[in-house]
Image 1 (cartoon, rainbow, N blue to C red):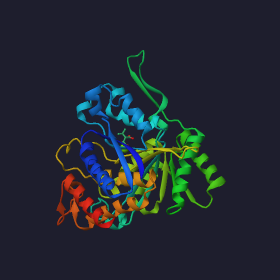
Image 2 (image 1 turned 30 degrees about the vertical axis):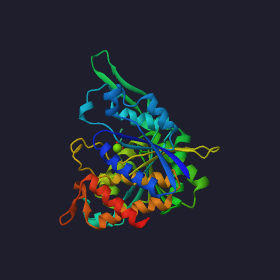
Image 3 (image 1 turned 60 degrees about the horizontal axis):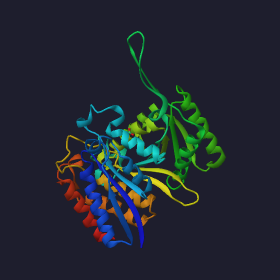
Image 4 (image 1 turned 180 degrees about the vertical axis):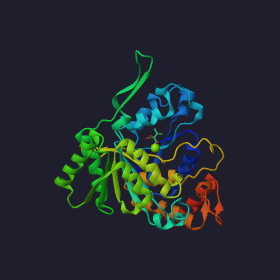
Length: 369
Ligand code: IPM
Ligand code: MG
């Protein structure tokens, strides 16, 4: 029997609630599947800060580096609004991404048929939507130097962030996008601001070069990031794979998430480079949504994004395609049965809490696997 080591980092707010449903799923697979999942847990974000005075301890970082995959909940909340900037809950997530080398962030925006009326857009605009946003995750303005706030002689303060990309960073993320496109609709839209930013110009030129050299069979278009934001609400189904930098990817993926009805539905995978010798690839899976402090601790949160993130973990880290498909089918089935959490509630449907939604998905899964 294969053993897989998973580090679970529930984090803050609704993170622990939605991750509890993922842990039930893992326990179910341990009881019924051919793979043995060994899990460990670590505090992260504000929860870690409260106990250890840091949003992620060195011991937790070591476990994350050693794990076959990390399952991450969510971090942050008003409670930690005034902690020092380098100790804020989000700093833990950024450090995990950077130290694990998770440069490729896959954010699929899929509109389940049962939810097409939940979107704030017209159903015909979003029905059948299936986009993959490929966001660069370890570069750009999130990590660029110099950065910081300085005091000027005239009494003003000045802040600097640096947007920076090198050719190899652009090539490796574009490669992920082209490879994924070949398995889907074979189209890549590269979103940047080459009309204003030199990093955008380099991005466009390097994506074009790589395409000409290795991916001529994939249809490539370039789109200005602002136009991409507009096209996503005008006609989102024109897109297949969108590849973009760290900051634009952050923004465009929140926008794409809302097209699907609720940000509570969207999973993500953050992947590192595959080690050529060992075949090992570091990976972290997390729902796109945040810690939702307004509903935390009430058992109301939608666990589907976290559950679908675990499905992505099975698909991308453990090559368990059948099991990943089964989880996704179970989610679609409960939605078809009219079961809803508050964020996707519609008239005539049945309102469930976090734990009940987890149970409904487990029950469906048990029937199909
Ligand atoms: C995301 C989040 C993070 C980001 C925050 C929590 C640091 O918004 O994963 O999209 O900005 O990348
Ligand atoms: Mg974001």
